[in-house]
Picture (spheres, helix red, strand yellow):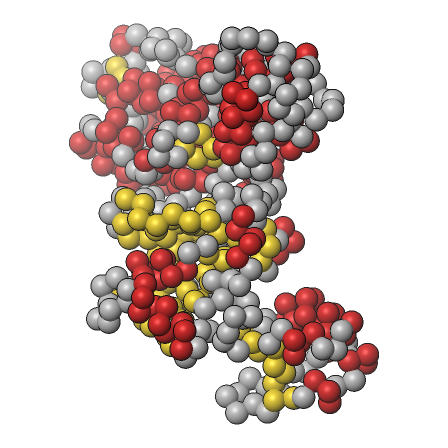
Length: 536
């Protein structure tokens, strides 16, 4: 703990301290020497209070009680996955035992900057999300940290005020608990790596089976220690399948390349993964709405949340890696039953026209119509009128449309949430793809596993009766109908590679779009470690 403060008798008078602070925060030379401080905010804040110290009582000539409280809070910042180095604790450790007036000035400014930085980081992340992850398009809530500090000085509720800035979502607190657990695992040595070699299958007898059993046990998976430790028995098979399910791997009970890679991710690497996901939670609004949809891209799942309860939970299909689904928030405003699909230009140029050129019967066989323009009266073009061998996809002058029906790529229901990415939720005729573990098959939109169940729940509260039977009746009619929701429903399309489920099981899944990797490079989480733990 950093508790060694300058003695009370060493305190300077108020005039000297005020002059020292003004000189310190306004001098260009100081700003060049002490990098990493928010000098604009410091100048603005101190000038508004006449350069009076914040953390030093000029009458009692001693630190105010909130100063020690702030130090204690900052020492615990790693509990949120934050870095003590961002809050000057090492510099303060060196300065606090000293007596000179200049040190009191620097201590005061460093504590003020630490408060402002910590408050912002805890409330909305360490930097603007799009500077860290260009595919994240959700702006976090903003915080006036200077006004907050002024209020704290008036009401002296520093600890409660800062605690209230953390994301209130239970998923965030679950990740905090998980961070403690994996830091403990890393501190005790983690787990052994499994040597590469032939596939390990149930029934095999291999020296590596003993390592596999120990490795799973050290991470908390149940194993049976009775019997032959080198035999890949049925109990170990079931444990490995559980591991695979929680790592987003096909649960085949075999140690193949993907499973071997996941087994050999270290505890320290899992800590880094947790840190990234804690940061993403700080990028979200504190109030998500009493009723909202959350789509986890990396986890291939959709959940409808109503009054803090998950009322729908289903698998989804997301964009291919080269047409990745962005992270954004939309507001679902209406549904379309039996939708038409007006094919976007990119899909038309890159997907459909090359297939039509190779096989001139492709569009007709798959229910696509060629239209001369975008108006409702657009003339339909007979595919036979076009010399497909002379067509250049980038210069194709027509549009393609699929009519409602079993072949329609949008399926029978489309959930509309207008956004600049033209990403929405919809059904699909390719139902078999939901059985795949890694489901990156779309052109960016989100295909939902149970569209009728989702529509029934989403439309609850409308004037009409939209039971599952009523929805199926409309679908069977092939009539295109748009149904507006009573009020827009927020839809958060997010990217979580770590989460804890309702049974308390930790999921660590593959970084399917490489966003963890880019984010880690920006935030420098590779440096997370023993030095931080030593300060705690």
